[in-house]
Amino acid sequence: MNVADSEVVISILSQAGFEPTENIKHAGLILINTCSIRDNAEQRIWGRLNAISHLKKKNNDLKIGVIGCMAERLKQKLIETDQLVDIVVGPDAYRELPLLVAEAESGHKAVNVLLSREETYADISPVRMDKNGVSSFVSIMRGCNNMCAYCVVPYVRGAERSRNPESVLKEVKELFERGYREVTLLGQNVDSYNWEDTSGMVRFPELLEKVAGIDPLLRVRFSTSHPKDISDELLYTISRHKNICKHIHLPAQSGSSRILKLMNREYSREWYMQRVEAIHNIIPECSLSTDMITGFCTETSEDHEESLSLMEWAGFDFAYMFKYSERPGTKAARKLEDDISEAVKSERLGEMIALQNRLSIKSKKNDIGMVFDVLIEGFSKRSTDYLSGRTSQNKVVVFPADALKNGEYVRVLIERCTSATLIGKCI
Image 1 (cartoon, rainbow, N blue to C red):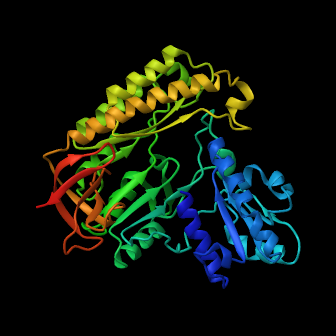
Image 2: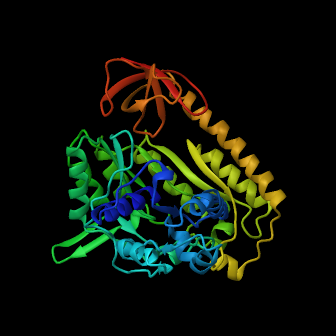
Image 3: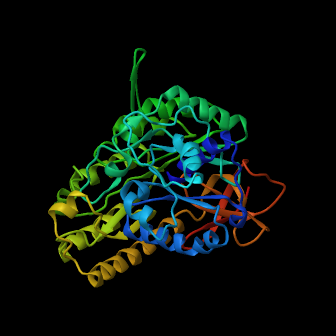
């Protein structure tokens, strides 16, 4: 989502006469787009600010800004930090950036972190930052109404608001006409997308179907679904359209119903398992990935084992796994004690990662001997003798380069695999 926001920011500044540069030493304005979901993300930003501080010493006219979620959460601290930060802009105030830069250039600290109930940037055509010209992100909504106990997003990105579906379709059509062959529809909880006007209501399954109907050559992905909201209607929509990718990211966070209740996730272990069973029944070829948090408040070894057993039962193809880090202002920070030691969190995370590594390699080994349609995204990271792309199931495939181009579809027979990659040949 930060990539999509950065593309909006570049568009706004470009219209105001700014030009992006890939050489930071040539920049007169440096903006750092930030995330506050986890403490380590914030710590990296402090490190980044420290790393570029020498540029400010060499060029007194250089302006440095922090934008996004961290700006929203730590506005005062950022402004007071070594006089390094000149501009602080929250995720709903990007339109004001040209004025705020001008204010900073006049010698004043420039701050706007006001949240909005309407802002979706629907009328702004993002400047694409991707290098391959094949796949891109399209934001369909902003904010979140789910008050998960551990999560800071509702406080830094505000309430949910959905984007006009016509503006979404217009943006996707323009991308396709420019040669893009894959879009990922983004929202904190895409399942709750809901647009209503005098012409009627459009929910996420309808929007997804409309986007898929633009052209059969356009692949459509989306992220992220919420287990409490993902519906059979959505699953049947995915199953009907070959060009809607057969991969769902469904964050579980924990396999313990007790912990899920403390997290205010609004579903149980049993509910999550029923949704996974529905996915496999309606879309048998669908791959599944997840998010997991270890060491949440009061988590026992039994709770941890339930998370491990859920992961093994679901056979996730991939997972993002994290140690719980308390975020100031959240319900967990106010009401619960962060009582699991760092040593225990690290040990449990290690067990979780080891298990997921086994599940990932098992998933890929199951694909050996199968043939997949692969969308070419570019050369392999290791060699220009090989091309790289992804299957509908979001698995990376490498295969020998031939007279092929980015954005083309090829049929690839999978011959072997590593823990992260499928390896095959075109047929």
